[in-house]
Length: 255
Image 1 (cartoon, rainbow, N blue to C red):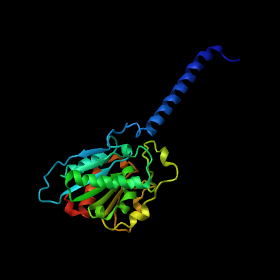
Image 2 (cartoon, rainbow, N blue to C red):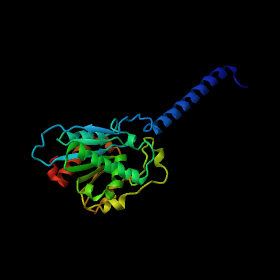
Image 3 (cartoon, rainbow, N blue to C red):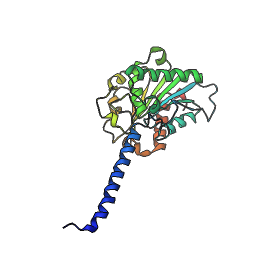
Image 4 (cartoon, rainbow, N blue to C red):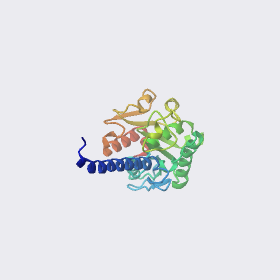
């Protein structure tokens, strides 16, 4: 026989459970649609002005940096870009969740990268470009860089990728739900054939889907760091590895 005194407790518990489920569903919808809702930035471009030592008499250099799918508000992207700017190199940051809020075609994805390079050249007056990216942005750069037109290839001093994946999707989704289907691109083989600029690839040794190990033997600088895709959140270690690799690959950049 049911204890009548338990019934008043059952209803609040059911309501609490329903409320929790509704909140979780709302959060999932918000995260999935964060790029389209501009919750991760409302501008496509973020400038990191050059600071630190003046570069007078040195190579006129700028960087293009494509962020991860959380934009420049979260993760390591903004810190890596700022570290480059602190060495006197202006950085044109591309806010990936804003630019890739909706699905792109391959032609459109290529145009984003080419357009960012042209923008950096025009806005900074640089002669050469460091093409850099992190996470989702690194996926896009790994895909687009091999097919850059010859005039832009000649301007690229180095390609630096931090934690790129093997599978690439042309819509940014911080919830990762959009990354469960068939990929839009798998850029490894094309990137292996890039010999017109040095390639640097930084990854976490615990990652299981990293593109970087596949570049071994190509002349690319493949750097494995402790941790998974988040690299143990070791911001200082990632920046040190990135700048060290750039100094070794392109000493004329003087980073």
